[in-house]
Image 1 (cartoon, rainbow, N blue to C red):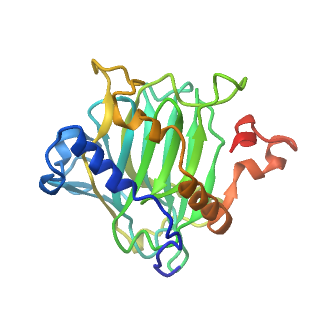
Image 2 (cartoon, rainbow, N blue to C red; image 1 turned 180 degrees about the horizontal axis):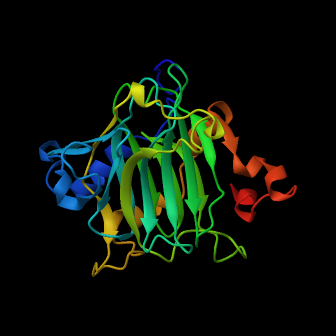
Length: 299
C-alpha cells in the first residue's frame, strides 16, 4: 500500500490540543519543550544486551533476530492518562514479526486488563496489519484489524491511547480508530478497564505461530534482523501513588472535552471503519453463536 494522507480534513488536531493544555497548566512554553529521554519514565524489560535494545537518548531501537527480540516498560503504573508512542516499524519482509505498544495491568495473569496496539508483519509488498484488542478482567477476544492509509515502516507516526473514567479511545496520529465508552454504571456486564492500574509496554517479538496468515507464513530469519524505532517517552498519566485521584477532573485528560469524541472525530472514526477495517469482532456473529458481545451494541 502506498503512503498517502488520510482523506480526513475535518480531524481535530489532538496533538496541538495536548500541547496547549500543558502550556495552560503552567508547564514550560510549548516552543521550548524538549523530548523526554527514555530513562526518565522507562526501563528495559528484556533484551538488554546492547544489541537487541539500543537506547539513544530520546530514541530506542529494538532489533529482533533468531536469538531474541526485546521490550521495555514504564517505571510506573497509571490509573488514567493520554499515552502515546512514536513508532517506525520494520520494513520489507516482516511476516511473523509483531511490534507492539500497549497498556497492561499487573500481575499479567488471568484477571489482567490490557489495551493493545499490535502491528503484524507480512510478506514484502503486503500491507502491515494493525490489530487492536482490549482485555477486561482477563477476557480479550475483542480484536479489530485494519490496514493503514500510509506505510508505517516508511516514517514515524503517533499511536495514542486516551484512557479516562469516561472512555477509551485509540488514535493513529489524530484519527480515532477505536472507541469504547464506559457504560458500566448503566449496562449490566459491560466491559471497561476501570479498576486496575496499568503499565506502558512495548516490544518486538516472534509471532510466527499466529501473526501472519493465521500462522502459515513464518519469520524468515534470512530477511532479518528486524528493527523498530520508538520515540516519545514523555508520559501524560496519573501515576501510581499520585496524591490526585486518577479520576479527578483536575487532570486535563479527564476534562469535559475528553468525555466523548467530537462530531468531527466520530466522522473520522466511521470513515476508518468503512474504508480501512478488515476485521471487527463485533461483526463476527458466527464466533459468538450468532450474537455479539454486549459492548458491540453501543459502538
